[in-house]
Length: 95
Image 1 (cartoon, rainbow, N blue to C red):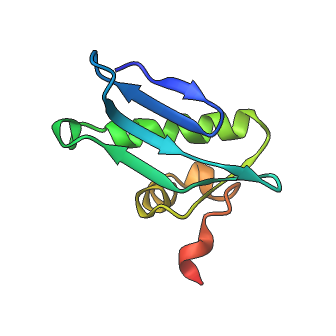
Image 2: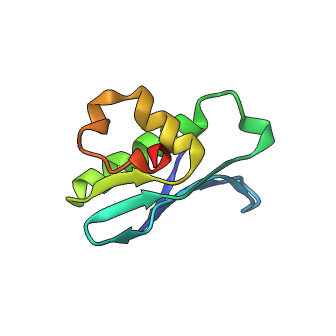
Image 3: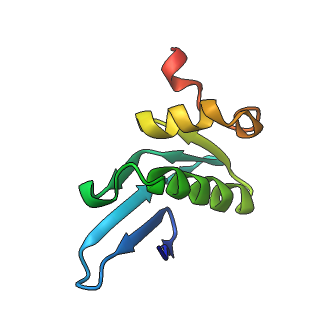
């Protein structure tokens, strides 16, 4: 699956232009917060959401920003990938 990149958004469309998967991560004050992930029911269970979040974190870090998450899936992903947690602001769920 090929992802399309926009500032603060990574997504995939089907051949008809319908949204198949998406992650959004607006940036503010040096932090990009992953606030939404979506994967079409037809693609769930295939690792698409994980690949989207990985791509988002990679893009965030390439831009010199810190990754954070308010989306529950992205929060879990960051916890499961400790190589990113020391540089992320993803501890909002601990409050």
